[in-house]
Image (cartoon, rainbow over all chains, first blue to last red; front, top):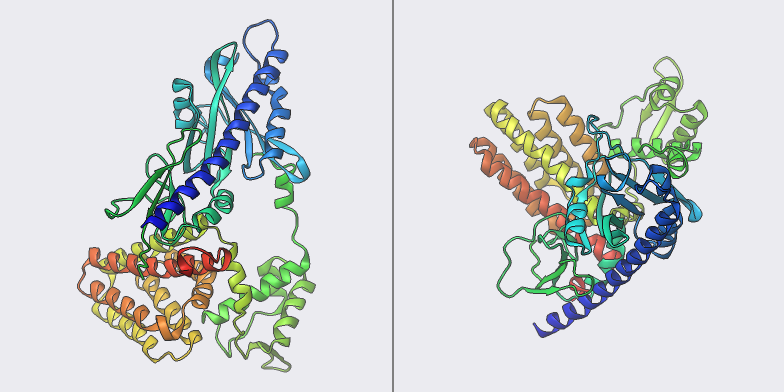
Length: 241
Length: 252
């Protein structure tokens, strides 16, 4: 049991370090975007769609530094831009260091409407001003992938006007997290703050499942770092079949 | 997928002919392994194949040549001529294991989800629609696994049972979905499972499903199906993780 506890401790430190770096660089990206936007802004006081293109280098810099996330950018709430519906300025990694802008449908009447203000990664971050992670979830009408979204607040002159962040495919995240979880001598999973499994080190803990009622000798350990509510849950190995 | 330039244009670029020929060989080999095509069956003629697969004549010829070299098909001349299936493909365990490694955990779980959705729906329709003699037939098919002495014969018996679940649902679409799923997964499953250690519980699980269906007990049938599919995928996940990350719980 002590071996298990020690291994969980070490794994939570490794995972915490990885997330700390990602969120540190998301904050760096958010600050760069804020500067880009202020430079691009005209005299109207509100941003126009065209102003947002200026953040591409900041997204590209983040994506070249972090190869696991698939896309990065900013999301502006309806109040921050002259169209009154908000904006998603989102760049996806392409071949050989290139990036491509993803177009989101923000027209409420369309079936493919991307209603981003209903997502936790938006509402939570703009209301609390704290970093957050959402997922895994199927990002229908967005990236159309099974992803996690990481966000930090985006401010302009001290006022939060939206979020800055990145999307990570579950299958890519697995390549970072699984080797760490496999060092734990037991069944172990990285879970979201809602106890949804993100990566599990055996067939007992499959991604997307809720962790459910656990045995009393299971261990829980909060991932330190950006304060995302992620945890490791581990229990002595139980080969079910 | 609104952006068809850049990275997406790479995804949708035309497939090279060599890959298409391989894809045809794989498709036909798997169909034979699963018993969708049987020894003695005649293949459509060349220009029909060309139209059906939507490829060039030369591509079909390459594929048929490869199958002929492997002793899987034979072309006879004359009035009763044509291309016939005369052998079965050897399981390429290495290639199948490589395919298993390429699935992420999320993709494996998703495949399990679709298996569940299909089989659970089939169970519901069987209870509504099947006659006692249908269930007798399902039981006979389930028991053929008892005679299996090789992993290949286990695979065929397993495949036949799962196909029959869809057959008894009376839904052509469910059967098509089931066959697509089996084509994708059952050969991989039986590179992980073996006749020695997995034949007994597989047959027991199948018979538990039959019993619940016979009693008209939907909840029990669905529970038995869930148990069975979970067990298959638990093994797949364990095998994949042991290949890719050979440390941790599985190696204790």
